[in-house]
Length: 390
Picture 1 (spheres, helix red, strand yellow):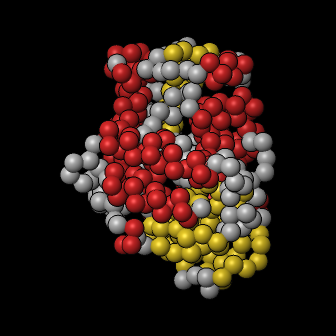
Picture 2: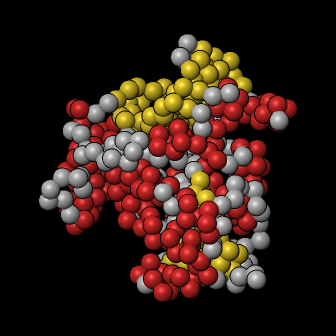
């Protein structure tokens, strides 16, 4: 029996969700989509309705019965209500119970392993759940899958990214601080190291981003890539640019650390507000932009992806999520279970991404030889190689 809605989006008033909704409307009919937020801003509500979607002001996470009824009314739920280390199981468990397919943009490492443990329950219910389908994680995982397929496996994956301080909303700040709590492959969470104890490296990103110092941070890719792909090890490094903003963020992350005695949500909120005030000194300058570098290799030989562009965090995250929802709706994902993005077909994903994207991005792919960047390639050639092999 067909359900009332094709897709329900929870947390639809947020910046990343708004980018996802606009992208989805470019690629598919959204008349049977329901966008829910607990407190719509008037301009955001008007923009959502202008896309042709139905809207509702509601907090379904506040009441289990309401959430269950909502899950039974839709074929797919897109959960964009973070932080996922607080809301991670709530919507997914309700979706599995209702037989509803699920997608989120979870980028919290500490909840990733527990969420993957729902795989058996999702399979038994015939539910497909795609987690972490944004930019990083998300597109990063799928690029890694494409490289690993091309190389027929790889020992190491090394990810490095930088975000512009101008994109650091309160929600983004809380997530970024959470990344300083390193997470082992088995899900063990560690206290935030002091800034001088952090594992750091220097990365040269293309374009306006340039040379940046990044530090080892917790992220889902090191936990999912070796589980879903023939890769031995994956690591993640990240930072805010400029470095002054990053240094303050690292110090405050150690103060707000939830692993330390006496830490409270109220104290974290106070520190976040102080950091937001500090960031006002960077608001007037030129944007540095966002940078990404991914090395997929064995003994320094393999492939490198590199980009540096003035793409906002919400667009970089929301547009891939829209492509993922379309893939779920059209049956272009694996069926039955909880999957990280690297389980998706790169060819089908990039076809869906073209439908919803405004274009641009500036991602390059290169041969990596003895750890050095070499010949420039094209992503379409990597996909063509896999098509011919198949």
